[in-house]
Image 1 (cartoon, rainbow, N blue to C red):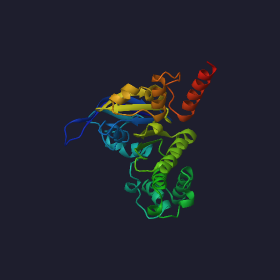
Image 2 (image 1 turned 60 degrees about the horizontal axis):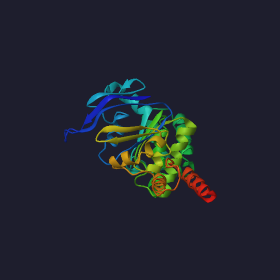
Image 3 (image 1 turned 180 degrees about the vertical axis):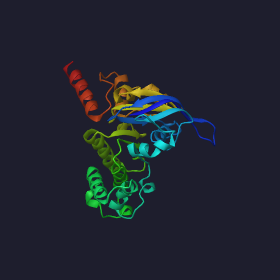
Image 4 (image 1 turned 120 degrees about the horizontal axis):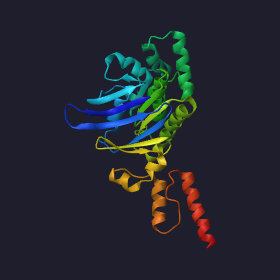
Length: 279
């Protein structure tokens, strides 16, 4: 769906490459998590995916449409929506349903179609009951779900989320991640999640690690998140479950050290305990 071919981006004020010679493809229906420390190029990558930024060199296409061609900009934005870190920067109305209607209205849709899309989008993020509420009275997680609904109402094939849970508490992060997973798994929307939370990345189909403007690693969560030394070299932590199993393994306890979620971590420790007990 989205293809980067030797794409680079230089910020004019610095002259330094924020992203350099990156080639990758994101397929329809994938849930891709992008990890990287601050300044690694992950947010620049996100902005290249729907034409917020245009590559300085190389090429980015969305369903074959070149993002550098201004004639394609509107269609690309329809196909790839973007949600930013702070939902307050995306909420423009004083009533939730009016905010969600903002995008479809700008597409010039008929009132009946706008009404249908707004209701469907709010239901999809479980915020329909709050449709007449003032956004500023909502929690951080609820605001972010409204921002996501505003993008969904425009019917994109892909949603790019640039650290959408960074400003939220654990409860708000859980709300947003549940919404993201449902959109991808149930509705087939392609999701690109920029994050620094390892447990969020563990939920994805694919994990990309950026560093120094390059793609350092690309693979399944289990393949990437268990590469402890390489992640640390990229100034990233491993998931807490993986770190625990790594330390137990080094201490001589026969656990499987490649688990990345809580359930498999518990299963690995339980199996090692039963094995030790039999001996």
